[in-house]
Length: 409
Image (cartoon, rainbow, N blue to C red; front, top):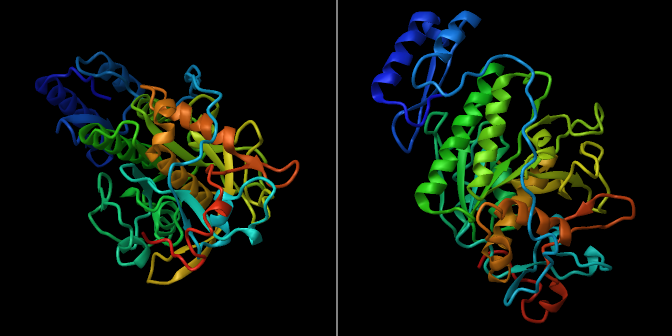
């Protein structure tokens, strides 16, 4: 990686050495969208060439294949006693699906008795949810109907507004869609991540995407008002190398800039009960919100990974949402979709004035959000995972917002 103080001449000298040492086809140059200068390269070079480059002025670090060392634990929340507060104004989505109704299910009440999904009227207004995923179907009514700003960023793929893998559209729908989303008024930014790349290219691509998000947040003054949804996973066995430490440091940088990071726990419970993939594995050292999945009754799903100490919270994983192929609704299952719901819930909490003084502590927003989620969550079934509750009781809203009301404002 290039030093922040590197001069143009130093960058050119590094470039010259790289092209001298490496096969041209293996060299990838990644520039900063904020400064326009090179941020880092990836290339296949020998250990001796690594040492030569390390001694070159302007080089801050070089990532080699090796087992990573753990970073020290991140600072935890100063607000461990943050608790739910009744919003000054709330709305009811009377036609909400059960998995959305569960988000506002108060203790001791069954879903069948709830009139709909209750949520604070702010609905995530002024908060931006960045989604790093497979893209989005920009012609679907769930995308078009989002009242907040919605856009794409293309730091790592061609500028095509589509979702050929049929995954990101559902994520956006569950996070902020008018029918299926938790945050009805949030802004959404989709960052497509191509799956058609070599395994060794995935982490550099993610670092580049995260860097683009961080720069966008800083440029637009969104610290404390940004959430990153990471509904993807990568095997720890593939990524036991130094580049993962750079990945971890990048996530830590976003957290320091008060960007809340939300990651899925993984869908391979049949192979391992525990979280065993990145980025969720970083949750032991960083203030990531790690999300597991439960079924409609609140029981851990057959696929959801993560022990009690590994999970921050759980949410419904079997969902209805927008299709990436056409304007239809599809059924999907996975911790990915539980994660999207939590990203939406977080966006709403960040938009609520009731929590501003408690959450908006410089450098502590992510930790405080995590603490708030944990303090409000509770198991729907004894000895099962703690499931999200957004602090709203929809029973008090039924007379104000008729059952026929829709999610659109």
